[in-house]
Amino acid sequence: MKKRYVIAGTGVRARSMFVRPLLQEYAEYGEIAGIFDVNPLRMEFFKKEAGLDCPSFTDFNAMLEEVKPDTVIVTTIDSCHHKYIIGALKAGCDAVSE
Image 1 (cartoon, rainbow, N blue to C red):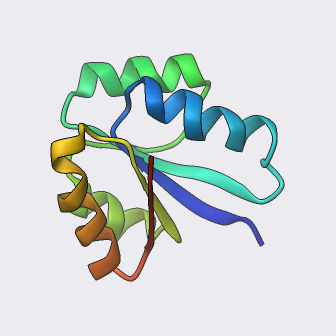
Image 2: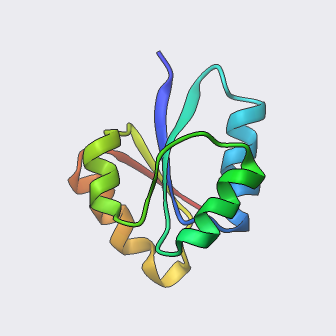
């Protein structure tokens, strides 16, 4: 069974360090089940550039509740990492960050 990953933060680091490898090299092991960003325009650009067809959210907790991921990949601005890592762990998810 594939692991369900969500992305918190849709900048360059998310695409190059996590999404691209997951889609190209590790697609048999996992899938991107949702993305979160506080900026909806950046998030939609990210989805288009990465070729993703998954739900997008501007509310982190709503994403966790709806998608029920196994792992949250946190690539937000560094000063916010702790907020999303703690939120992921409290929700029972694994958390990964760069």
